[in-house]
Image (cartoon, rainbow, N blue to C red; front, side, top):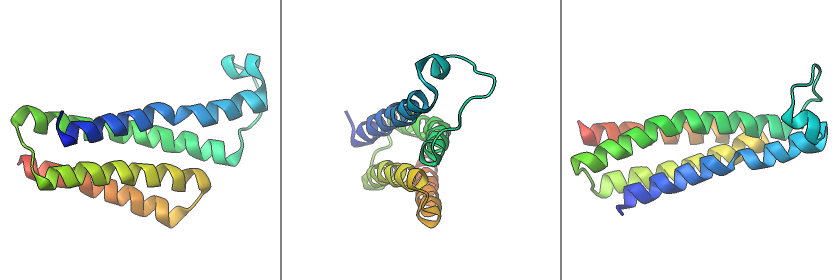
Length: 128
């Protein structure tokens, strides 16, 4: 497995696990029946859980682009120090983004998002 595919595996795993804390908060706040149902007036989640849910949605949206780029690079045989660095930096940017979003740290969240986006641009440039 290439380093880029390992980074993709780590990013996908992180994204796959981000829902767990905010779902536990949903169950804690609303109870199991309302958490799995459709109550008319659901109790609001804790602020951190609402932010983590938004971070998860953002991670899913960006995983689509990152995964496509990594898979195209792999299929095209494009792998070098630049693609490895971009993929590893992307993973850590997503970790920082999720944490900063959850804990409500706006400038760090935005910077982490920008770093992740730049990593995607680097991959595009390596492919073109």
